Amino acid sequence: MNETIKQLISKAEIDKRVSEIASKIENDYLGEEVVMICVLTGSAVFTADLSRKISKIPVIIEFFSVSSYGLNTESNGIKKTYFETKVPLDNKNIIVIEDIVDTGSTLDCIMNHLKTLNPKSIKICSLLEKTNRRAVKGLDIDYLGFNIGDYFVVGYGIDYANKYRNLSYIGSLEFVE
Ligand code: IMP
Ligand code: MG
Image (cartoon, rainbow, N blue to C red):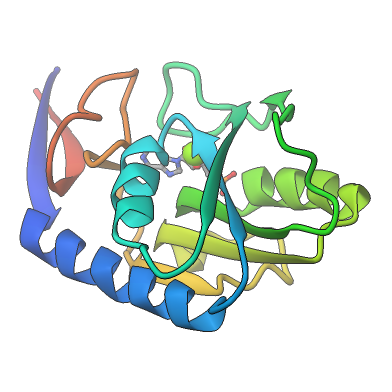
C-alpha cells in the first residue's frame, strides 16, 4: 500500500489563521501573562508559530505529553501521560494548545488534570477539530483554526506513524494499492 497526501489547507491559509488567533489571544489577555501548554508532539509546530506571533503580552511555554495512537489511524484509547511543568500552574492563565480535537478524549484527560491545579483560567486552542466525531461533550474550543471533515490528516506537526510532521501544509492521508 502506498501513502498519498492531498493538500487540504495551504501554508498561506495556515499562516493567516494562526496570525488571527494570535491577535485574538493578545487582545483577550491584554495586561496578563499566559502559559501556553503545548500538547506534544502534534502541537509543537503550531505552538512555535502561534507563540512567535504574540508580542503584546508575556508568554510562558510548557509541554504536556499525551499519546494514544501507536501505529494506527484510530486512537486505541490508552493514554500515556506526562504532566510535569517547570512553572507551577496555580493562579496562571492557561491556554492548552492542541493540534486536533477528534473524539475529545485526549483533551478531556488534560482538562481533568488541569482542573486539580487551581489555575486562574483555562482556555482551549486547537488548530483543527473534527466535530462529527466528538464523543466527549462539554469541551468548548475557545480558539479554533479550522473545522475539518472526517479525514485522517498529516502535516504542520501532525503525523502518521511519526512521519510527515515537517510538511508546511495540512493534507489528508490516503492509502492506495
Ligand atoms: P482525540 O483524543 O480523539 O480527540 O484525539 C486527539 C489526538 O489524536 C490529537 O491530539 C492528535 O494527536 C491525534 N489525532 C486525531 N486525529 C488525527 C489525524 O487525523 N491525524 C493525526 N493525528 C490525529
Ligand atoms: Mg495530539
